Length: 506
Ligand SMILES: [Zn+2]
Image (tube, rainbow, N blue to C red; front, side):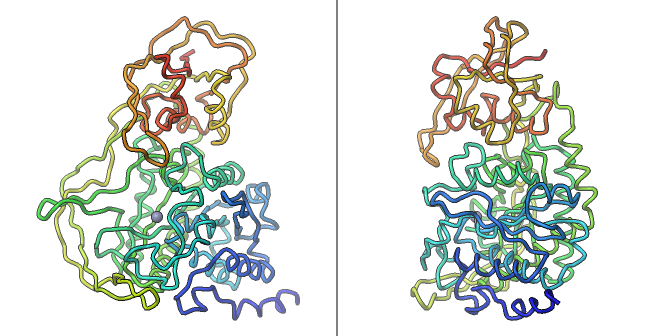
């Protein structure tokens, strides 16, 4: 009886976007009220919080599934595939937030009941919640709505959360990593809106593609995106494609994907042996259409996750258990040009935001094929042989704290280690002139060699026989293109001409 009586509130429940005919997007309080209503009306949706924004807003977390409560222990004990979705990391890119709210409601009303046999969803609908509250009608350039305004790209510190996964300087990235360590999702999805190129795709996507990522994860991810795209084409008629931006002048233009660095969330997730998926809905589709397109993407991605749940779990477990010691792991890479590919180029029509008077762009229904150089994959340019362990001295407190925050296991060294060690001698350590995210990124060259330098008791041993070893290598190798040295964590120590972090093959 309780359930039947409670079903009524969901019948009329609308998101702020739906209620305003897609003129406005949901703010923090709208997300709270909406999800609290769904939670109160359904045993399938649990509203909780996990972590904080820089300004202290508790990050709203929706846990959706056939589970008694939203605690990590309960979710992990269920044995279900755990799928994490984050929307709104860039708070002007809002349709993912609206999609995940509406999806929570619709699942509560009985849609997609089959999915809940195999998986549970763990959702940050409003990840950059501080940015969401900084509404302006001009935050997103030519993007076609919402005309009532949207939030900012950066968080309240002025930092881009989607460049923060290695250095962990935002409360939001730290909260998300804590969530990953607590819930250990198998699949992670990050919903965005495009920024630039006038192509003809309704949505572009990317998966973790750094050459250091477990190859079985890369292969399965490509199969996943191919089947998702085919399903969309067949049912909706829309062209989806792997992510790219166009540069150069015709006829020698280039289609280039996003960098493969783990500072980006989807690549970071790959480095953690998990499926990392990025989506970018086309920004010149009117807001209401972007919500529809993003919803279909999420539905097809989740349909595949449901069908392949057992396989996805097997692949991530195998990647966690893969012996890495003695293998060569990529620590630097560059985009590879692999011939030419046909890109469907689009066009836009000018509209006016009636409230700001500013010109916005609307997608024109044209698709002009154009051959372009294909830069959608990466090749390793530098590797290191994975040691048995690294040693981090106790006085490298910032490095130790970062490793712990990432969830990497550190073992206390109780007796001095005096043999079998290698030390890294720095040849060059060049800082970028141009600051990026408040840093001058450092590029280090040099070599490892046997040493009689010793490790004192009190240091920390980082074993390379642990699930996050792949990430640890990327963080700790001085020559890594996105490690602790890159982000200035080791700057003082590197002035001595040696890395403070030793390693051993014993
Ligand atoms: Zn974005």
